[in-house]
Image (cartoon, rainbow, N blue to C red):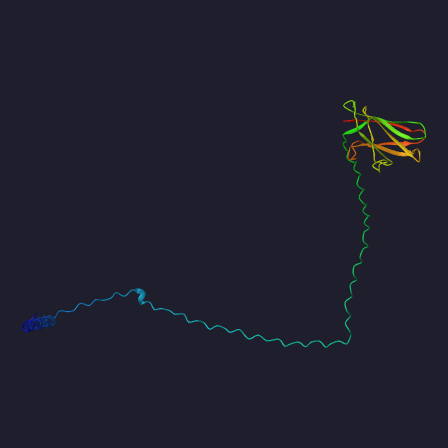
Length: 225
């Protein structure tokens, strides 16, 4: 720590230094030394006066005159004619359309061919005979041999009701005979014969005969395909 005596010595030294500096400055002033003056150079641009233009007085346009309102014309007593009405356009009569022809009827499709296990062998034939009966006989063959026990049915229409519940059967040689008797004498008119299986189903095509005085004994053979 600084003692009190040291503080006093420092303060005395500072006072002496200040008095010495003050004495030196006073001596310089008494000796005639002139202070230096620094002059500022003035530019020409700074010497020119500035010119501020005075705005001209603007002319105010004269006020426009407002036209006086015109009086509406007095109403006239004469009625005003309405504009002529336009006639509606005349409609033309519709053009006659020719009637549409109906489509042609569908073409009849041919009946599908039914395949039978037995078919006719040769054409049917018929000869005259006694008026006691009309009949059809023939031979049924299979593999060029007589077929035994084959059944032949008959009716008065193709697929009509059979004339007997017991069809005619072929013998050991394959021969058969169907007899037609109407009122204890020979039948006249159209009749058909065909082969059937044991259940009565058709197994051959129909064959037609027309019995009369010139046809009493018909002939038709059958064979297996």
